[in-house]
Length: 177
Image (cartoon, rainbow, N blue to C red):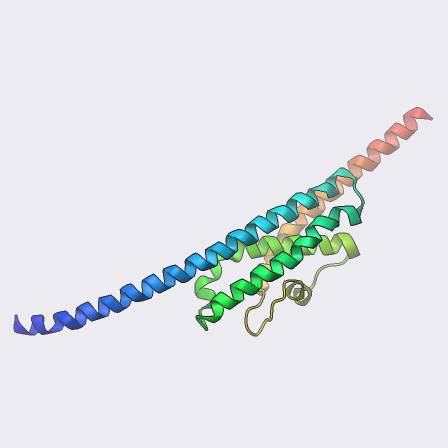
């Protein structure tokens, strides 16, 4: 039994080390989640503004409010990058905490870009809009691509609403002739 007793203090030290690591990780995760909740809120504001595209509003009018939120997102992603700079090479350990929101943001940015230009938003352009640097803290390619897939839903909806609106206007015009 004497041998087992001598290992007890080192075992306690080891578990104390694990406890400290878990507390530090939990604290970091809480800070990340606080920023992510703000990103989610900002994305909702952008989505609400973009819903006006389905009500036959002009593109500049529709994009006015969502565009103003891009600067907010840029600041929030900067905060996220600063938090993660405290734990180098741990990006993918915590990536799941902001993945879904980032995919939504990529989708919104791509849809806004398409409404403005009629072109697809490139990965590098999306990173630039969010103030991200791929070498330190960047937009994961997978998140960008999933965001583009989400955007396709909005494109279909916009096309259907546009066709209905225009077809309805044409129908009314023909009835009055």
